Length: 614
Image (cartoon, rainbow, N blue to C red; front, top):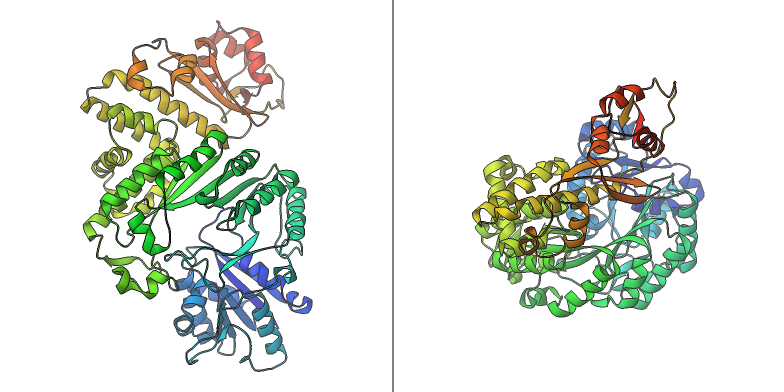
């Protein structure tokens, strides 16, 4: 029997890993695995084309992993497959199939769905099908027109019995790839808007021996980054600390993306995180206890700030999450949450509109929560008794402005200084920026997704122009040049985080006749003040120090060498020589044009990879 397991990814990225499909295949009997193929799809593909691709494999059974982002397309594909090949067996699993089973079956004209964790039930389905047995007694399986109550969601009580898709080579590993790494299943919490704890409460960690073996394999295959799949890895702290020690001792060179529960952050956890290359994401969601309480969450702002400060002081990169549109919240409440979040100086602030997901408490009790939502993905709110449509639009615009100015514009290093300078709360300043965006980029209001095409280099001039206007309005123009320096400084520092190394390249021809160009991986910028002053006083009150700093302009170079960031001042002639090296001049011509640059300096630039053959 030929089996296809189909995954539609959110987009093409290092996170586009068919982990659920890999788990299903790895759990099949060996003979079935040989005839099972993982199919990966991406947005933009048409249902008809996908059907043609799938049928060309001549499958007998097609299984779909169905999530919020993939439901519409995959179930359309499933329905069309049945029309083209009625005898084909089609099944689905995943959160959407588990939470909305009968509707998913009807929408996709499926033979069945599997609710909950599917490894054991999918293997049973395959075995029963091979042996022409009835499917009725398979745990978690729901068939068309099945009466209520539906089969309970399944879960694996002993995760040690599940084979690893990585150790079995079910999922390939290549040098520099990314990995979705499951370290536990379940959640100890029961947030009303979240699906993580559904099916089985509590956390079930995977065996440490398996995790260690997987990490050793990731190390051997030179994996570059790992997304740790555990929504509360540090609950309790001892479990999280044991995991961090395992990461540090086994594969410390990998960059880890980790989700943490702020309530359980402590000094030891912060110290261990600081020993890793990692980024930590923390779900804040809102800061009003009266909003959070019905959602089974709580917050103490003072304690939260202290715990986040542990991360900051340890030098740990962290981000926060906020949700607007929550029941009992409003735009003013969202602005307060935004102010608190940005005051903590997260490296990233992800803001989402409330999605009322099937299977969650809010979805099941919309009337009690005072909300009404779409019945199809993305399950957006239609109405909210506490949040008017006008207010939600304001929150949406403010979230967009935050994403552009703060996140994509990499403003964490100077943002609070700017707020202090103009005497505005973060939300107030970003509201002004939102208005500025509407005036200068009206197309954003019609299609906010276009912001995904904006790179930091595109946002940098927006930050400069907006801040210049704001300072003029506040009669603070005397501070503008220093602010520009700070914005540029932090921009280039952020660019260095992801920049390749500057390495020398030996010329293929005669050293003297080869033409030379500036290495594209380095940046040179002329600042309004000396680098030494910017670095020494850049974190202080801008208005206070603007008149104290030297007005001497200075060129500064930013580059990476041997994975270390180098930031140094350059004398003017050497900087101009590098800036004007466009690949049209050989060494003699460079010397004639830049007579004040010593030959030793040119040799140094070549040896260090600042100049490379054109």
